[in-house]
Image (cartoon, rainbow, N blue to C red; front, top):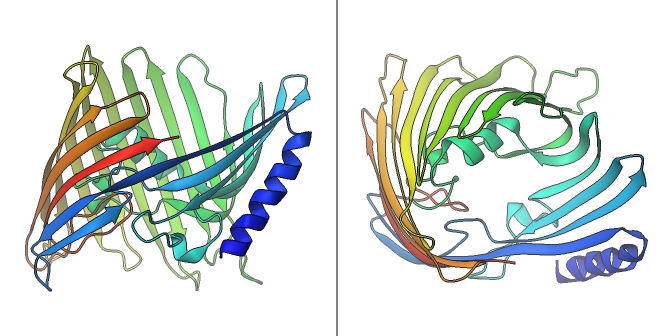
Amino acid sequence: MQKLVIGALALVSLGAQAQSSLTVYGVADAGLVMERGGDAGAVQKIGSGVASSSRIGFKGKEDLGGGTVLTYVLENGYSIDTGAAKQNGSLFGRQALICVSGDAGSLSIGHQYTPFYKTLNNVADPFSTGMAGNAQNIFDGTTRVSNTVEYITPRVAGFSADVQYGFGEVAGDTSKNRYLGASGTYEQGPLTVVLAHQQYDNPTGTAHSRNTLLTGRYRFGAITGHVAHARNRDLLGAQSHDTLVGFTAELSGANHLFASFIDHRDETSARQHARQAAIGFSHNLSRRTDVYAAYGHINNSNGAVFRVGTAADNGSGTTGVNLGVRHVF
């Protein structure tokens, strides 16, 4: 793994001479994670990627002229507590894509975030899918998909759209392992409204899961309100609904408070409902570094098995407490 990383760095360094720009960026995030309510009992551990998953990435850009720009992103996930690679050891398992953009929008190919995840992370969730309040503890956890083509329109009168197609790459049947995703956004002043939908076909092409998410965010001065509602259907046809309400508040230039409540309603006869309540706080030590604390608790009903996790960990219990530090470079 180390030889692969060193080789990739060398290739990027050599290629940088032909690029208009090259940026090395990343996140180093570590903290104390305490969990209760799991089958194996209470857990205390050092977690990596508690508020934001730890990563190192490379962004390159070349001006092709006429307003057209070519960019690429190569992003590796790692565990800062052990040094091990994340995403099952993939070299660039977080993102790997090439994109051409201009006045007509942007077209990208590769291993990319889904429109549904970007909607949940960027608009719906006050915790930005991190810490113990992570909305993906309840909402769909599909974050990124391989073999995708994505087109994002320009923003016109506040409206924009994002369409993504993931090739299943199974000979003889294009529906097997196929992914379809899209979102439409309206953003004007303090208001943002997004409708997102996704469909994932199973390996045999005989069934698919789907999720539809409608979310809104409104800024009231120093306070931002978040609301979201998702309708879900799994591969077996079972339906459920997820509803989120929350807020973020800037207490001063350096302090931020955020909280959310999520209600999961299982529409099957099992009625495996769940509710999550969470609160968090962060303090900026500098423009790039902050410390944070968070608490989250899930109340499962009738055998539901939702767990309180973090940005990079699914969690093991129904109660989680986080205390950590994050540096963005």
